[in-house]
Length: 262
Ligand code: MN
Image (tube, rainbow, N blue to C red; front, side, top):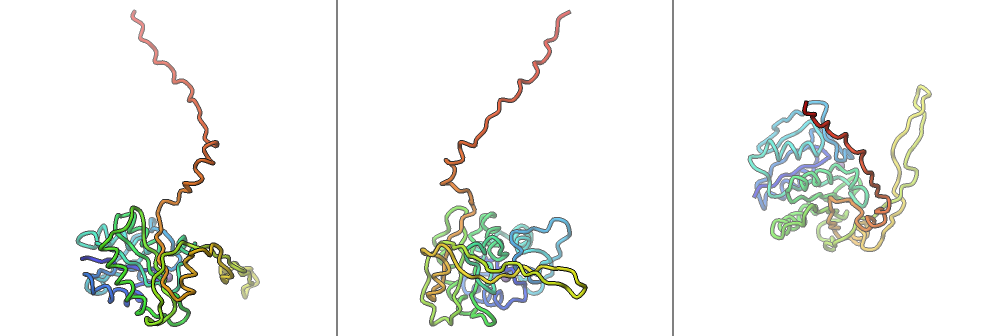
């Protein structure tokens, strides 16, 4: 069993170390991760500069690119064959609701899914200290289930672990992505030279979608497991948009001149 581990917090992150260590229980672990923190890199790929890869240990590589770059390099170049499983994390901080759109952690798992590899993103709730080892023990169990049962087409698992020691985690709940509302999302300040600058900040003030939502599981001390689909088409809205369809009959192509027989 070959397992690829990556993240967006960088190769030195203790969450990555805890994850890689735990997964050695079920397979040969390969770590390919950014050489520095790339949190909120989303699904970015590096197109306009070279990528450098540094072998920092056995089956352990630091890459000068984004999490998605790491997955592509790992799967298409560095590993001897595609991995049986990809796990991204364990991220410092949750990736709930629409965080999945910004998160490099989740994007790495999405890229794995695009490449046909069963993939999971793992994020840990916390502030200054993180119970990475508690989460890692559950990750091993979920990883075993993924390997045993497989995943549906174009679907990854987004796991969020509550800020609790192992013994007080109340279980695993299957949830839906929520949506959050931010207060004061952009801070405006003036720099020492009198010029205005902006800082994207914001404190999370509330959640919408509370029925079976991911953030609720964490509030109850449980791990949230959300199946995330790559197809973001709004299938329920297709019918509504049909009336916007347009059809245009292209102008008749000029008839080829018939060759006159002389
Ligand atoms: Mn991160």
